[in-house]
Every structure is written in C-alpha cells, then in structure tokens.
Image (cartoon, rainbow, N blue to C red; front, top):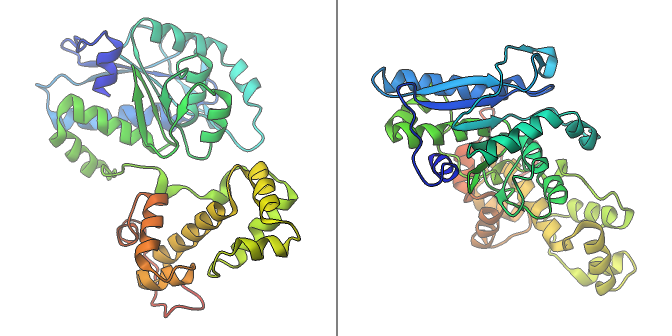
Length: 350
C-alpha cells in the first residue's frame, strides 16, 4: 500500500508531518458501516502499539454530502472532502438482483469525488464491491484489480479493459488498490501498517485484534455453487449428472452417449452455456467435495482423494492446490471444523 501512495505521489514518499499518514474513508448512502470503521479501528490499534513517538494515522470519514445513512439506517458523522494521502472506498450491500446501474447512478457525487482525488494524486483503495465505484470513475481501465470472488465476473463484464484477478486478496496497480470481500479490508490495513510501521507492529496488531495476517489468496473461500449460473437446461443436466457421480472415472464418450449427442456437440454446447469444459466443472465439484471432507472428517488425504475419484493422492493434491492455493493437509489445518468426529469413510461425517 505504501507503494500505491508513492506511485500516486509521483514516486515520492508522502510528507506525513507530525500527524502521520492522512486517510480518508469515503462514506456514501448504503455503504457498509463496518467498511467505514473497520480500517480506522485497526489503524488506531496499530498507533497505540507503535507508540506516541511514531507518526501514526489521521483518519476522517469524508463525503460530498452533508448527511449519510449507511446500510441498516446507520447515520454517519461526516466531514467535507479534503486532500488526503489515501482515500478508502468501502463496499455496499449487493444482493442478487441489485440494479447496479441505478445504484451507481445514485452515487454520482461520490464517483466524481473518487475521480477528482485520483487526478490529484491520491492513492485510492476500494474494499469489496467498492471496486464498482472505482470502475465507474474510470480508475480500473487497463489496470489489474480484484473484488469479492462472488462478483469478480460481474466486474470483469462491466469493465472489460480491467484485468480482474479473482484469486487475489489485494491488488495494487499504479496508485489504485482493490481488495477482496469484506474482511479483506483487514488484510489491506495490515499491509498498510506493515509498510508504514514495520512488520513487528503489524504482527502485534494482528495478534491483539485476532486478525489473520497470513492469508494470501481468496481461492480457499470460493464456493462455485454460489456463483451466477447460466441457467441453460443442457449444461445444467450435464453438471447434475457429473455432480452425482464424482467418484466415477471421467469418460467423455459415455457422457455424450448418455445425452444422445456426439462428444464434439457436448463440448460445444457445454462451453457455449458455461464458458468451460465438463471436465473443468467436474474437477471444481470434486475439489468442493474434498474441501468439505477435509474440513469435517478425519479421513486421510488418500481416502478423500479416492472419495472424489482420484486413486493417485499426488494427482489429487496437485489439482486441489491449483484450485485452492493450499495442499490438502495445509487446507485441513487452516479450515478444519471443531465439531469433527472420527469417520471411517462412509455415512455421516459430523
């Protein structure tokens, strides 16, 4: 993040003065209050840990409006827009069916403010779907970016010139930083603390606040069942068959026969409706099932591999790591549920 500040300031480290780094959090109607206060709270803790003799952080909640109601009807005390070193744009509620065009149209003053701050050399940071405001302001054009894995496809579709990296927690590109969903604001804040106050202060802040400071990717959290589905009947039927037979050997010819089409037709129609191959879907479903088994049972990695169709644990482990960013044993250590009971390989797992 310090790199983002330096890039935005023409390559020079900002003069923070006696008051420290100036952080502005942009409040807007419907923003998530946690996104407004989460980063300042963690920076406050870091300031106490660093001590009074170390320049800390000046944090203000800013808005082009005189009054802001956040999500849930929470009234926010805001100050007028002013020059800052870093402008943080929080996320907002975006349930299925949200009229995003209408939502963003109603935030024209904020989008204009984001654009003006970036033009003035301010480093701009978005949290979660705050990236959509940055995209609307033109800040993601021809830049690498990320957002919540759940909305990454929508962001890429809305801003085709952006290089959206859905697996990343934090992406900084020439003065613009985007983060993954919600709690990634803490990953960003810890990165800022680490670069501004040093690794020791960041580590202690994470321990005091019980925040994970070792995450590197969104991959372990992705649930493909929650991703928007094309909703076309043919691919849905194929996926259903594959999901019901995870442990069976993948046989493209047999699959095509089951749907009375040629293998070429199966691949073409499936790709047209989903953008990927049946094998890619099967692999993702197998990994999803394996994640559940690793989290909720005592089965060995070899047994988990066999349960999802892999006789070679090494092949399974490589596929699992490619999808989640973790080897199976490391994933189990990080995500194992506390209510696990012994499981011999079949029946109920918890």
